[in-house]
Picture (cartoon, helix red, strand yellow):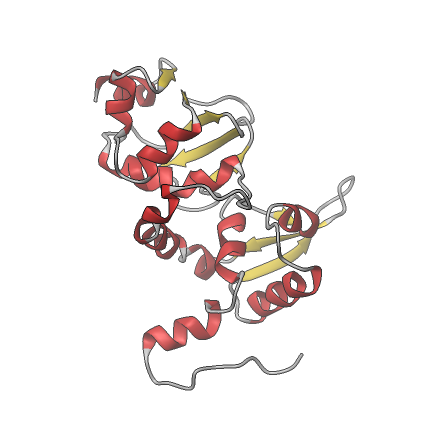
Length: 214
């Protein structure tokens, strides 16, 4: 593989950008925070990336120990990519970047693609101010675009997952895209949305009760 272009600056920010400053790299990390993903799944959820660029970025991430590639056991026998602990350490970076850029969600452009799970990390950030100190739990979220689930209090492994939670969730939130965007933008808290009837919460677990009683 050809050598990567680097900033050649003795600066921690420059060193970080040497690894994740290329276009698409951080969005690949966003997708892999959901756990192991096949190449075809990554390509489907990164509209606009070419196959060559995606393959190149994944190779760079393997070389820089941000991600690994492994083969699933039969009957799947497919190759999947997953984050290393160093790669997973980019979670707070992505969350901070999402907070900084949330004003950009003011208007959805006609050309904008959308996936329900793209709201997962910003919503996880928004929930930091809510009393969900009930131990690890799974919070399912239903939007018009689809479902995803959050692993509340997870210290390792996936941070979120696409679709309904396998085996069920401890609580479920249902809201429309406008409400979710308002929460992500900091214009509405989850408890305010629940009290106003804009967010429906179900589940009798400690997590569900904590969300209703906040």
